Length: 170
Image (tube, rainbow, N blue to C red; front, side, top):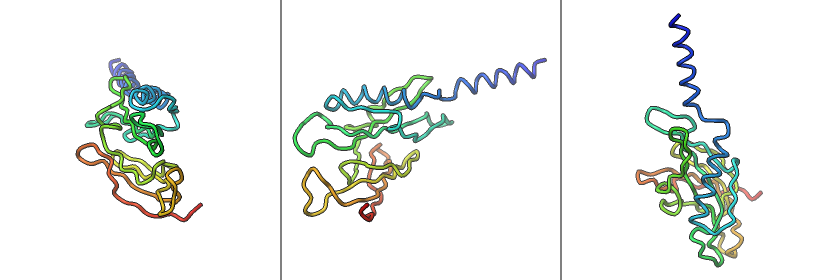
């Protein structure tokens, strides 16, 4: 009789540790509140903007999510101050929190593109992204040279440029 009880207890414990199905929505809500404190108002974040870096809890890591958002960090105004930034969210004992020490503006996000237009891939310490960087005659509002680039997480928590390749214009 004890064996079925053990199976039920193990199943219940596994369900308690699993991330709820709406985790990306919860991460987006918390990230949007964080962004409201570090950027100009009006930045909207949805579940589609959330990338799973470490989707499941592990022995040595909490679930970790990256949120890429476009906005004017610091609300400085003027041309060229709006760009793609990064917020990191985690889940700990069921609570969704932003890690400000791992997010813009505290850490570097060395994107060669002013705006990220496409996420190609992501992992625990890697983001592969696409966007446009500036050509020699581009105005500040219109970078035109398409690139794919890889950012890697360094020991200090900064996302540094590891690789960049030009793409053919679309």
